[in-house]
Image (cartoon, rainbow, N blue to C red):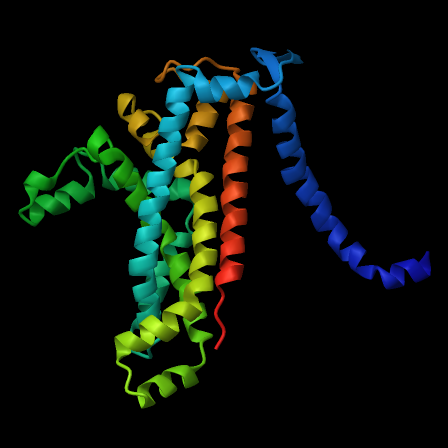
Length: 305
């Protein structure tokens, strides 16, 4: 036994993490899969029903309408977040690699919102965006842009975009930090060689910097996708009890929650555990499939000079 422990001492260090991972990740996932295959009477499990709960989510109204609508919102959520972080985030990260006075402070200010809880961020922006006395609309009026002031979270046209931009404000510091690390890992010799060959700054960025930082961009994109498709707190806090406009911000996380526990503002029936579990399993399959394909693409597209 002693000899075995000496040869496999790593097991002792991995075991606590493995136990926690099994209790809080593997077991809930297995439970959700099992619950999704059972017909539930309220909160009481019934007989095995196969894929009926999945058919209900994907094919039967009103669940199919809400599911595909929520999935569409998740896709829009991810697309806009990805665009912001891959343009503004990469640009700022590139700037912060330069040694300029005040850049360290700016980097800290951009990263600071990422350290805040999503619930805190949601309540903070609820106060700022209040249509009656919120600081955001008040600021627009002081700048002579009173015609821009509106109930940002209270109307279908702006509710989803507002939540997405608030999420981007909170999230942007993370990709900036990771992009900066990726940019700093590129050897300066490549850029010096490009300058010797007469390449402009844009040509060096396009043909040297960008290809070498693409794996970092891909990794952050996958993490963003996982994060967005598991988003719940921010949307729930900012649009949790707003009535009809809620449908314009419904995502898979809130759809799952309301299906499982019900909600009077949307006419949900409590205790749809089987259907909610089917939604959770579908969310997992989407995230797992896209993440797998993304990781494979990153590995295949890595460039080395």
